[in-house]
Length: 626
Image (tube, rainbow, N blue to C red; front, side, top):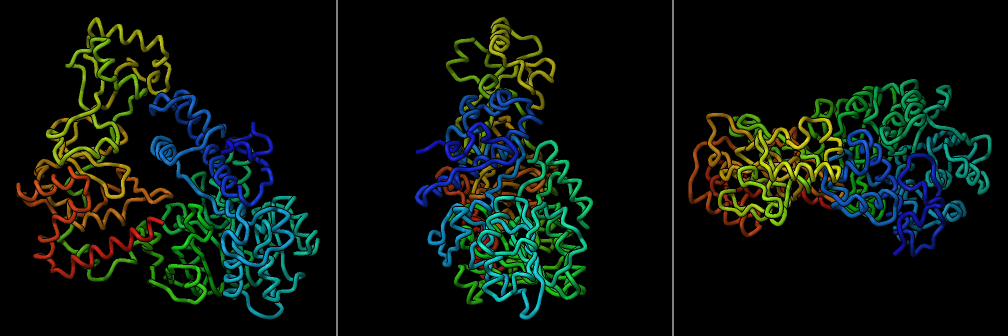
């Protein structure tokens, strides 16, 4: 299998921001080319975050316990990145891994079941948006007759083709595209006349141009992933032309979408393909308020079938109709397949209030919950976790391997047992733990020397200096460098990466790293009572509603989200119930542990309520795990 950087014209540019070019490949290798492009984009964002947070790749590797050579080779595209590499990057670098829709251009028409290849598509060797989706959106928003239409980033021309097939005269289409090669090919293959092609960044496109409809697929690039002048230019242009405020944490699709509204005539329509994150990220909230104040109706469409083939980018179709009016709600429609979308057979529909989206609630998620369940979740029968506990991340060692010596290293350096603390080093380590940490074997120890290190510990400290541990970023900014700060013992531990988070009663007094969440109970709350009331379907449903996931569907719990999880109030415990939960966890059956509370829920709310709970959990998982 070829190295990822093999597919780049200049392999030295792999993982570095800026314009790059890729080699043409046969259709049999387009999936590999797409994977290489994904890794390149991820490597660019990782490099920036590593530089800002750790200073160097070597220090990042030491901090996270990864092999420096392996991380370096991943960033250079010399070996393939794995999902676990993405998970570590997401946790330690606080980056959101994106599987950008533009990678779909590496698949030909047959591979994603789209007919009608054109010379332009063949010349580029790929395309951005499936023609079926382009045609669908054009049919929905473009009126027949002498209308003017704008495509703000036409790329390979999928929407230009769809507009022509729909009967829109080419002289009535304005096409904007920053890539000069795409502009030349659009003219060469007669998709647009030269006078209608504008080679420029859409954010610089003059606001004096007005049209009746806009349709397109804007770039999904994160502004913070851009470097130097590119980032400054994007922020400057966006702030000048976008009516919605945004910052480095935003993606370019946000100012694109907001600026599109300004180019529409009264009564005009807008249709865009956007990442699913538009439904919940904080920086998009004001965009929803802006759209609601400018259109008569707004519709969001989600399709479970991946619109871009097997690529892991979850997207939605946004349709805004009749500029000049306003609405306070969004029509949300879900479809299982592309065929069901084309035949208008939705599997779920809901009206989402714009105020709920703007307030920060994951309103699109919550819209899939039945009213019977919502009434209970909004009642006094349920509380937020923060009412009884506060979740926090654990310590950051600075060098995972050095500060977590193996049994052999402990014996070799004669490190005293009084300086070794049992620790939950990762969420994966929690997989083999019972409900009670005291009944579980600890595999890892954190070295925490006393105020006056022993003779042998001083030798170990000297070894750390000789091997450069003290020069890593986290170590060199603390005094003394060999003492890990913020080492604490929580009463509760919760896994971060999982399909169903696992909660542990920490009666064994383990400490915990920043790959695990630690919970600190209020004085009047007992750990056993909290655990029993945690393991119910109400909690599991709330986890699906509040906790975000990676592209592959793995949940990633962070303190802010964990503290919002809903549960039953803690009101005593039963040893028999706790043993059932512990047995299920010991057998690796986490869902079974959450089923233990079914009988109690059925007694309190009725058996139909419990059935509805689990059906809703499965529905949300159905849409999360693609």
